[in-house]
Structures are given as structure tokens and as C-alpha cells.
Length: 191
Length: 101
Image (cartoon, each protein chain N blue to C red):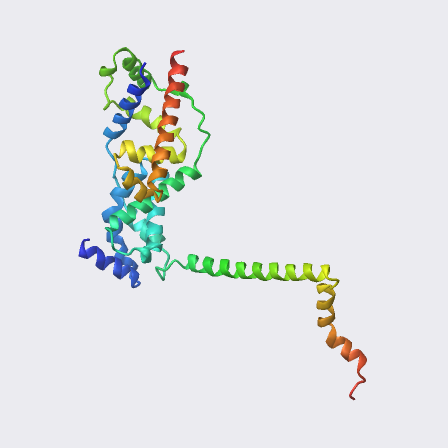
């Protein structure tokens, strides 16, 4: 670990809170990027990230230094995002009648010629966000970490505190939920 | 329509989405302003722990007294009556003994 970080953390633990600011400045981009995967509104994103930093400050005395500070912080961030998802569980009734014209066009293109439907199209990204928002909190978390951020099962277990078998079970259920949503979307749109 | 194909395509789209690490202006200052002044120790956790321990101890005493009361009432005793007698013993003594002056 960067010795400067060690000194900063030690200084904060000694009662010099001003030394916390460089850590906030250094790692906020990473925490914001994580939070933006789970919240849409910018006000919610900022709330989540502030919560992460407040918790980090309060729990800094539990940081043992046997792993990089960033790993410890990202665990905190993932936990906070998960808490946010659980506290903002909305009525997740699948409703694909509100697809935008761009999303509908992308789907139509996929049906006619799957290869022509581009993955980098904004419509595709909007569609996947729409689907993820309709998953349960644990399903959304595990699929985002596994499929979107491309993390391993072991990394996910470390980040979430879940056991490896539990991650696997939740991933299996999350994929089943996702397939069910896609089937609903196909049925709503094309039947 | 191949749902498996659609799923793969959409997840790939999700992966291609660039992570947005923009930090709002002045964010670090706002965080610093919200930090609890004083100790970095999680005072709330310390208090919570102490209160929970006291509550558990009180619950244990309550259950013990409840068990004792139940046993005594089964054996013909009445803990409530005994307690009252004990508490009022000093008053009873005052009533029985002649005044000293």
C-alpha cells in the first residue's frame, strides 16, 4: 500500500480529520462510478457516495491494512449500494409498454437481424438498465458485479460478504429472473 | 427471437457502458463538512453496544425473577406478597414499637 495513504489513515486515527480529505479526493471517482450503476438520479448517487465516506470515516479504526485501502473502501461502497437498493425497492412490476422509440427500434432490428443490433447503441444500454432496475436487489447486485463489471465469484464474495456458494445460487436465480423479464418483454411487445 | 441471444447482447451492452466517475464540484468539501467533529471512534456504536448489554442483563434478571416467582407460587409462596412485606417491614416496626421520646 502507498505509504502516504498509511500516514494519512494513521493521522486520521490520531484525531486529524483534515487528513481524510486527500483520501476522499483520490477515491471518489471510483466510488461515484460504482454508485452510478445502482442509482439513476444524481442526487441519490451523491447521497450514496456521501454515506460511503461517512461510514469510511467512522469505521476507519477497523481498517487493518492487510489489504489495500481501496479494496476495503469498495466493500463499503458495495454494501452501501446494496442497502440503497433494498431501501428503494419499488414496485417492480414489469412494464415494457413504456419503451422508448429508440429501444423499440433496437429490438425490432434485433429480431430481424440480431447481428445488426449494436451493443454500443444507447438504446441497448437503456434497455439493459431498464431490465436491471426490475430485478430484486440481490439479483441486480450480483448480475451487475458478475456480468457488467466482469468480476469473479470470489471477488463478489469478498465485496458482498456472501459465501461463494451463496453468490453462485444468487447468480443462478438472478439469471433466471432476467430471462423471465426478457420473456415478458417479448410477450408484451410481440404477442 | 432468441432470448439467450438477446440476453447476451444486452449484457454486453451493459459492459460497454463506460463507468462514469465524474465527481461533482466541491464534493470533498461537503463530505468534510459533514464529518462528525471530535473523535473518529464510532461513538454511536459504543453507546449502542453498552445499551444492548444492559438491556440483556435486565432481561436476564427479569426472566430469573419471573421463574422464581412462578416456582414459589406453585409451591404455595407468593413472591409479590413477600416483597411487599419486606418493603413495609420498617413501617410495621415503627407501628409496633413504642416511641422513644
